[in-house]
Image (cartoon, rainbow, N blue to C red; front, side, top):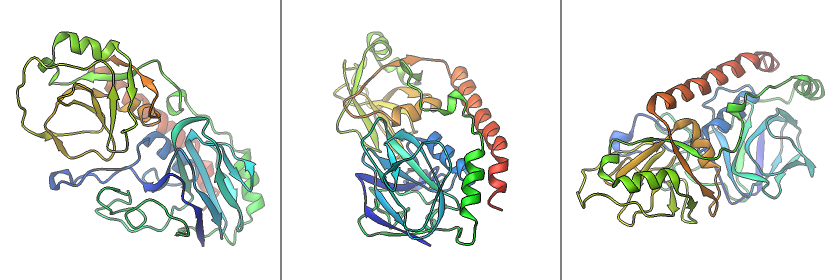
Length: 328
């Protein structure tokens, strides 16, 4: 029950919802950059939402299945193909022994998530199967996929009537609320930080009215943005403080950095804002070279949006109960 990596793609690594509870020891959370697509892919194959998925960046891998499986691909549209035939995103798909999954040219987004029913056999490191690439641990041998890697499937569908299962899965109607889709927005929503008074009023206004370009130096640790530099009122030095996914730090050059999944655990730069959790997936799907804007919302609004997102996932989870029953 295995999968062979024919081509690894640009950057393909296993991620779950992160390695929580260890930041006080200096261990970053890591996890999926687009947690929404990750969770959705898992639900569509009958998994728990924290099962590790393969995070695929821009150029996807080519995988040969040596055993049958049920898969789903969510997030970026990277034109997946099974045996050279197009595959849809956001649907459970049956693959058979000998099938080859590949990806074509990017159509939208940056990161796609591939889930398998039952997941891939991976060791847990500090209660997580996420790959922390800078530290070289977690996931598959602590690294991105390489040619000829062998992935072991955790679920055995060899004795399943695959034709019948594929038919039943195709008959299932999957309704995705808008909040769970990859829908572009005119601006990324953000909440002012407690450090905002350290910046000049013009800089705070500029952050929410100017256009920023995602730098080529952006990666899983942080998105560097170039645009109108932001200035502080003084050269006051700050003590290092805990960081979070979506914190917008401003170093001495005035160009903001949005901290992402592989962020460091603490940082000493002043933070001008925090990206609302609900919009972090949109940011994670942004390509270097693309431009974006920010819009201010209040903390209560951010919490309300989080609540709506979780309600949508709870509703989807309930509606997919018949899908889960097909595997048991």
